[in-house]
Image (tube, rainbow, N blue to C red; front, side):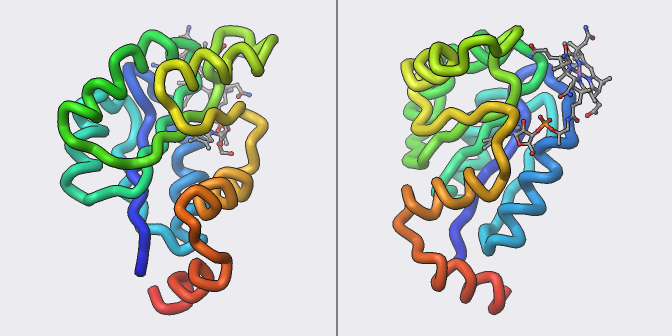
Length: 146
Ligand code: B12
C-alpha cells in the first residue's frame, strides 16, 4: 500500500528547486507526494495532512527564517489531529555554522528528524522507510505497481 507524504516550503520562503527534487525522489521511491509548493502556511500543511491522511509531513526552508516560521507548528498539527512524522530540511539557520545546535533547536520544536542542505534525498527516503518500517522490497513493489 502506498504511503502519503505532504511536502512544502514553509512561511514566506519561495525557494522551489529543493522541493521539486524531493517530490521527484519520493515519488520515484513509491510514495504518494502531495506537494503544497512554496510559501505554505502552517495551517495549509495541517489541512493537507488531514485531507490526505498523510504518514509524514516534510517541511522545507531555505531562507533562514525556519525557526520563526515553525514556532507553534506542532500545536497547529495537534489541533487538527494530525498523527504524522514530521521532518524538516534545508538551510535552517542563518549561516549554518553549527548544525548540531540547529538540529537540537528543531527537535525541541517537535520535529522527528532534521536535515541540512547537504542531505541527499535518498538519505531522507531511507530514514522515512525506517521510521515507517517499510522494507525496501515493499517500497520497490509499490513503485512497480504505481
Ligand atoms: C536560487 C536561489 C534563490 C532564488 C530562488 C528561485 C526559486 N523560485 O527557487 C531567488 C533569487 C528568488 C532567491 C531569493 C532569496 N534567497 Co536564495 N538562494 C538561491 C540559491 C542560490 C540556490 C537554492 C537552490 O535552488 N538550490 C538547489 C536545491 C536543489 O538545493 P536546496 O534548495 O538546498 O534543496 C536541497 C536540500 O536543501 C534538501 N532539502 C531542502 N528542503 C528539505 C526538506 C526536507 C524534509 C529534506 C529531507 C531535505 C530538504 O534537499 C534538497 C534537494 O537536494 C541558494 C544558495 C545555495 N547555493 O543553496 C540561495 C539561498 C538559499 N538564498 C538565500 C537568501 C538569503 C535569499 C533571500 C532572503 C535574499 C533576499 N535578501 O532577498 C531571498 C528569499 C526570497 C524568498 N521569499 O524566499 C540564502 C539563505 C541564507 C540562510 N538560510 O542562511 C542562500 C543560502 C544564499 C546565501 N548563501 O546567502 N534565492
